[in-house]
Length: 96
Image: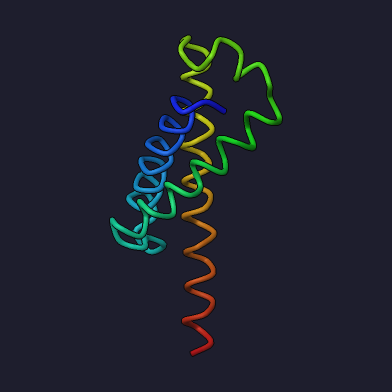
């Protein structure tokens, strides 16, 4: 993964985390929490997507297909991790 792909994954992950927080206000971690969970999820999710679908890495990160693949992988990864962190947070709060 090159630097451009990583940056795209992180930004789209943060956006995906915030979008998921807005779509599910009861699961939201707040703007900062949604962004941080999205950043991590975008980086990890984008890496996993690129490992599973190597065609996304062809073109060096500068062609349109590669950029769209990075945005999709990062956004979905960010939204998923934000949801997972929210579920864990709510489960721990219920025990307390």
